[in-house]
Image: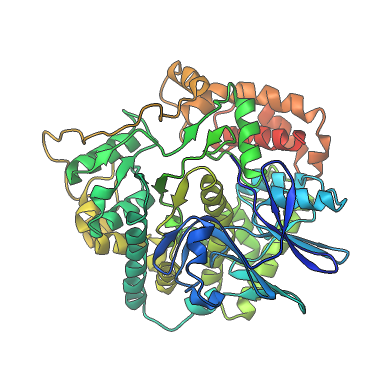
Length: 569
C-alpha cells in the first residue's frame, strides 16, 4: 500500500492537509509531526512519526542533521513555523509546485497531485522526464514525473512562516569542504557508519535482513556488521540464485563467518502480477513514474515488522566518473552519459533534450567552480546529489512504504572521506577497500567470486587472498512460511533459456524482450508525443531488430515501462 503524505499549501494562507486512504484531505490545525521513510537520527533508527516527534524537545535544532542518514522526509509545524526537512543529501525527495501565487509541497508526489486537483489545478505527466530516465537511466536537475512539479535541491530544506517560503541549506557542501586529512576523515566516516549499523541492529523489529551479493557495496555493509559484533542479529539474503556466482559467493561468505541465510527478501506480496505489462503498471503506480525497473510494485503489502539493510550509496566511495575530470567539460556528457555526436551518436533522446541536459550540466559545473570546487570534486557531487540520489534515494524511500529499508553506507562523514582522497586513489576504488579493511579484514580477504583484482590492489589491501576453506559446508537457513516472492511468469521464461546469455542481460529479460518490443510498438501508436524528447530513428531501431546489446535490451524494457506509466491516468 502506498502511504499518503501531508501537503503544505499556501494560497493566501498557510495550511497543512493530511490525505486519508479514501482520497479526502483533512486540514491539520495543531502542532504537527510527520516522518516518512527510514533514517538514523541522533543515533536512533526512526521509521514512524511518533518516534520522530520524541526527538524534538523544543526546535528542529535538537536533531544533528549532518550526522543523520537514510532516505526520509520529515514535516514539522511548531507554533507559526513549518519545516519540510529531508535527509541531508535529499535522498527522500521533497516535491513542490509554485505557480501563480500558489505554493504546495509534499514528500509524496501523488498526494501533491491530489491536493492540486482540489484547487482545480490539473498537471500532465511528463514525457520529458520519462525520456531522461531512458537516456540517462536516472533523473537529474530537479526534473520530476509531472510537468510543473520540481524536487528541491540536494542538501536543502523548506522553512515556511508568515514572511514567506525559504529554501535553506543544511551546509553539507561546507561540511565536506572542511580542512581535514583523508585518514582523519576516514576514521570519522568509519565510526559514523558503525553507529548506523548499531542503531539498525538495535531496532525493535521481529526480522532483520541484510542483503549480500558477490559485489563490493553489500560486502562493505557486511564487513561493518561484523565489526559491530551484530552478525547474530541479522539474516542474510542474496537476490541471486544457485548456481550463479553472486549466490555462491554470498553463501560461502556466510558459511565462513557463521551467518544464517534466508530466502525471504523482506517484501510480502498480496497480488502477483500475471504478466510484464501488469508488473510495470504496478511498479509505476508504486513509484509515480520517478524510477524505472525497481523491485517494488503496488501489489505488495506492508510488512513493517521487518527491516532490510542494503548497500545503497556504496558507489559514492568508489571512483565512478572521477576519471572524466581528465577531459574538458564539453567531453564529459559523452563519458558519463554516453552522448556522442555525428555518425557515432546512438543516443535514444532527441537532440533538443540532449542540448538542454548538456546546458544544465555546464551550469552545474560553473556554479561549483564559482564555489571553489574542482572539476574532479564537482563530478563527485554530481554523482551524489543527482544520479545516486535519484536512483538509490527513490528506491529506498519507496521500498519503505512496504518494508523498512535502510542504507547504512549513507554517511555524510563517509562521503567527506571519499572527497578527501586524492584522485588517483579514488580512480582505483581504494576508499572502499580502506573502509572494508578497517571494518573487518577477514571479510576483505575472502574470495570475490569471478572478480580477479589487479595485483596492486591485492597486495595493498589483501583483497581476496584467501581461498574458501576445504569442505566448506552450507550456512544455516531460516525462512518464513509464504514469504518467498514468486514471479512465475519470469521463472517460466528463464528456465527454458539456453546459456550463456549476453553479458549483463538477465534470463527473464532475454526471454521477454521480443514481447516487450511488440508491446512498445503498440503503445507508441497512441503516444507519439514522446518523440518530442526521443530519437525516433533509434527507438524504432531497437524495437524492430534482434538485439544482443544489454543497453538496448534494457532500453526496450525501460521504454515499455515509461509508456505504460504515461498511458495509465
